[in-house]
Image 1 (cartoon, rainbow, N blue to C red):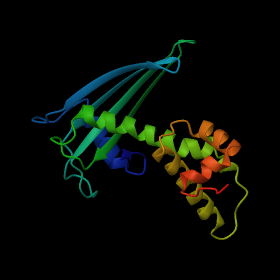
Image 2: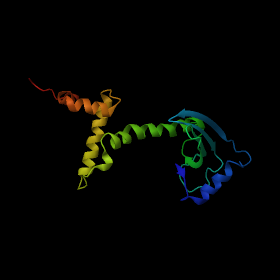
Image 3: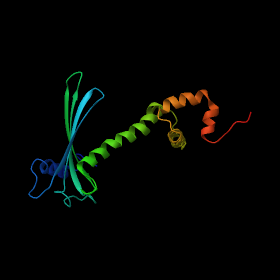
Image 4: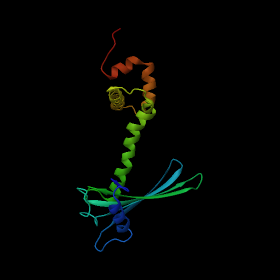
Amino acid sequence: MIVKENQPQLQADMELVFPFPPTGDRQESVRTVDGGHGRVETRHRTTSEALVGSSDGPGMAQVFELGRHVITKKTGKERVEVVYGVTSLRPEWATPGRRLELGRGHWQIEHKSHGVRDVTFDEDRSQVRCGNTPHIMAALRHTVIGRLRWAGETNIAAACRRLAAQPAQALALIGIELEN
């Protein structure tokens, strides 16, 4: 969980722990460099156990510093960002590299589910607003996406276009066979 201004003391403590680690604090770090989408992004994650027990938050096992340095290839523009966070994962279960993978994996879920619902099904522009209907429509969209993924579809938009032109195949996906 990212620590923001709503936890000012914890954030201030974290901003000091990483550049000035207390004696005996064993900090671990990992750095990755990725290129893609027209940019080069360098990430580093450093973890520390120095603040465990110093916060009211239950289950804090580590604190971390996550830094991002992004260079846009086309313009050369640079962006640097540092955020701090806490995790309940113990160091032996989640090394800095594993935590970096978990954080990156979150966006895969975001794009595979929410991105499809927002772009392919245009969910954000839905005008359905009364009673339980918005929840029902969201459940139906989610069910369609899940069923298509279960059937091996990787491009949901293309599958929807194909099945719109072949309704018998769409019905077969839910177990309905048309008689001739």
